[in-house]
Image (cartoon, rainbow, N blue to C red; front, side, top):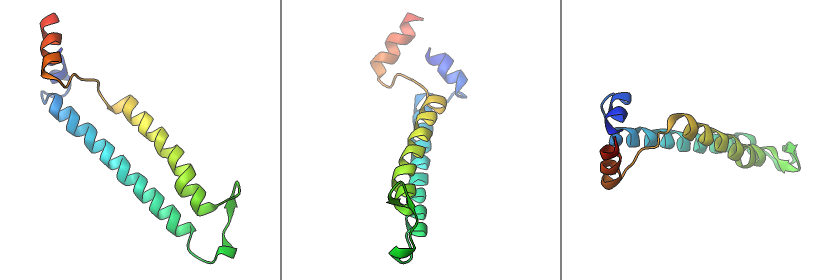
Length: 101
């Protein structure tokens, strides 16, 4: 199993996969921060009388906190579903799996 994983990932192994997945997670977290910051401060600037409302909440709050949460939760689900790989991280598990083959 370990040999098949190395071949499918270009011979890099489990640490390459773990670093790649960490990078994807970091990019998604930074994107969420920018979404929150830009929607919160671009729609939230100005006098309160000029605010528009969505479902009883100010548009800046709804877009940055409510919609952003749902959008990035779906993106996180899709990222885990399509980009993450289930690999054994413990040395003992790797030895047991490779001895079964």
